[in-house]
Length: 164
Picture 1 (cartoon, rainbow, N blue to C red):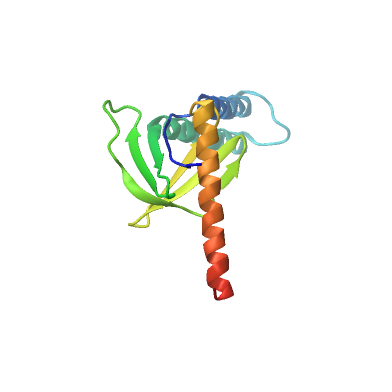
Picture 2 (cartoon, rainbow, N blue to C red):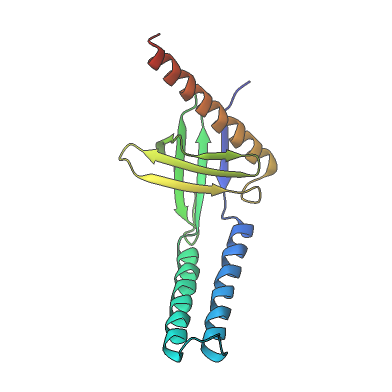
């Protein structure tokens, strides 16, 4: 069985929707703080809290819009990973990408992949992959390939520390 897989990861609509709901909730809370009587807080404290909620909600909203990226992940049969990144706003094909290493603190769950990938210059890419980011078959294949890579590294570490 080969673990080779190549897939394009889009931004998750579910995650984007949840972030937008959080931002809308923060804006709603800011409005309530400004225009509704909230406990025993003074108008100065309410205004300060409202501004903080508005600023944080706006920051998350615009940061989410700005950081939308498309990832192309290619795992070879030997477990070597190539990552190509392109902002979603740019048109064109993804290039070949760069070699990256799967870090051990990545999360590999059946419904969520949080891949922490590090290139040779020690830059880290955090890739959030939900089932709606890729095809169902691509998600499963990527999960199996990443688990195989983690197990292979764990076996190599075990042999190195045992002296074999």
